[in-house]
Image (cartoon, rainbow, N blue to C red):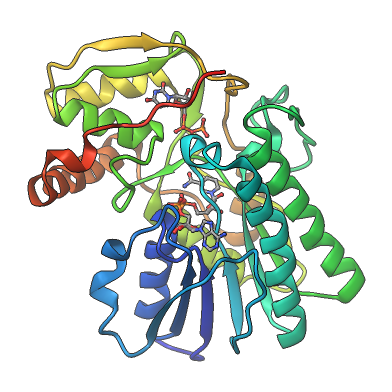
Length: 331
Ligand code: NAD
Ligand code: UDP
């Protein structure tokens, strides 16, 4: 039931998470303005929304000011795959920092609530495990991941300073590794890489020994968490960890994907990228308590949905769409 129709701005709305969020907001009866510079997002992901009169798509780079009239802002614009954010690191930092300043400025002028898609990367290579929101992190300020990590950390600083200085209504979500339909086959992140490699019978590229861990959240759970956070009481600003606490090694992930797809692909070792975090697992006690939220989709189930998505994608768009799963540049 629609209680109040809102106009929501979603920056980065043509990306993986953005497309799911736009759909949820439309399903709830809201109007959606989707702003994207299409650096990693694609129109293909939202083509079916273009006929919806409550959906508006426009090209915009958040490093420039934006003048629109909306009731709330979800700031998702930023490449999230290490391969993509390291491709143009200066632009990545600008997107996080100038993008945050511009979107916070817009929220301040309109006096509306704004949610920031922050990241588990603010914890860097964490010395505290699992990661709780009060842990300040272990981040290299000058490495090849720093453009993303430090950009996102500075964006969090800006969000909390706008709250303290200007009384702005803010929500900061620290998102942990999320996967699902609408990821690009050439996105470069581990789940899409391994699934496409398995489906195409290519080698599964494990970086390092594959003993590093991640905790994978299915996209519908994550979007539900963002929605609950945005609509939570004013005093809940975050930061809140949003992710699935079930932790796996990267080798275990590869083995699961091989088992589900029945692929005969070989597992091969590739060099471990610089500053690759060794472990990552969200402590979600705060989100459970404050948002009554916890993820519902287990990894095997989410992988089956995602594999089915990529099978269809590769059938419809041809194998060349995933001809090069991306691996990071080495120094
Ligand atoms: P994505 O790369 O699929 O989507 C990012 C979107 O932002 C793309 O559509 C891209 O074109 C757009 N974009 C990039 N720079 C822009 C700019 N300067 N101006 C306007 N648009 C721009 O990534 P995603 O996985 O959908 O991530 C969305 C957000 O969530 C990002 O802010 C990311 O840091 C955060 N996040 C995602 C994950 C995850 O696992 N998916 C984890 C932590 C944080
Ligand atoms: N990884 C891998 N093979 C790949 C892509 C990634 O072994 O083809 C590893 C990567 O080194 C990291 C983990 O998988 O340890 C998750 O990588 P991803 O790029 O998905 O996200 P991150 O959590 O590092 O930002």
